[in-house]
Length: 299
Length: 270
Image (cartoon, rainbow over the protein chains, first blue to last red):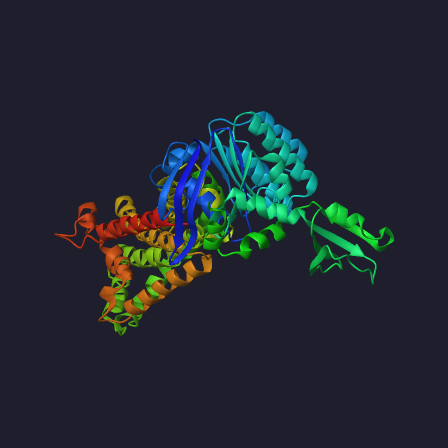
């Protein structure tokens, strides 16, 4: 196992942030970690790399306990912090040389490929970079070392869609090369298309798969409709919310496509279904309090 | 890696610091002959209110000009060089060591490197320590050459001992600043606390009955003049049992503050 976490708890003073996380990750696996802000994703990653000491539970990363052997883990692990961490006074190249200088081996082919896609002006000072360029530089520094484990805290932050695809390709190449990756992100569909497994972290707890799937199934019954004014909804469509853009969020009683087809076509200005919006998923998962959620899924 | 980065960040400031020390030194030396003549005619310094001030004035007005010059030099070199510029450099460079990393959001990146926190502290501290102490030696040694311009001999070894004591005082302040820098999230807070402690100690030093409780008692005319005049040597500097051993206390203080900084850094959680 690359990562084995059992009953992991972390408190800051009286405030418990992680409430008994259980997680296992095999070598060569790519795990997606998704959850709302403040769910504890960054804290979990910091515990894994040994930047934060866990309060309780068992934690093994690459065969070592981060609390006592963080240095041994960090020699075989790369971590991309959640906040873009680049030295403003250096040039891009100086920062890369500095960051990569701590590791014996690097993935030169991947580095060259990413450099080409990102097209960063490496001779310029980092302070002149945009937020997206700084994030690209941080990604280069985190992915280029040739290590066994990569812990990436929202690497796609501040990246545009095309750059997110570049990142996805790079991560897939690393996965094929047998690297173990933990990826935290807010882009559910992109993470899902990339990872072997997805874990949902809500309020310091890993959401059980059954509950997560139930929430997704519920969301798949929802439609987002833009209708002409005065259009009457059939009885099998129940309005859940009015979006700020004027669209209606409705829940279908039965097959959503059949319900949609039952509407007069000239009344429909736009329709969206089947898409799982992360914020809606969060709302559903946060709807029940944690003990209740646990009771619902337990046999 | 980290040491090289630290050095690149502070080398210009170190050079500026050396230039300031040198600029403060040259007029002090070159104006001495005129000042000494004026001093012989005046009784102002012998009538100063505080005992320690009178001692300084009497030292400068000594009938033997060579001794008077060394007294003059010890007061100026170390008051300006160490207690003013040296401390300013130590605080300026020390505040940035860790608090600036936190402000710039690079601290997490740095701590996640595959090096120990002790290594990070060491790699950041030793270039900074060199940058604040080496100019003290260089500027003071240059006083030998400048003094020769006015036909005043300055002995090399006693001057080096004085420089060593001054460098240790600056180093102790750097260690203190480093500790506060590890504990603080903002550079301005470090400057506030270290500045506050410094001002408090200056205040204590100026009160006759309390001045022995001030850290500046470890770096004043009474500590440098005996060294520069050759009345104290290396053994006396580091022997707190049979002698004053002021340098010994500075070494202990430096070690203590760096140990506190390391302890705080190891315990630090993000």
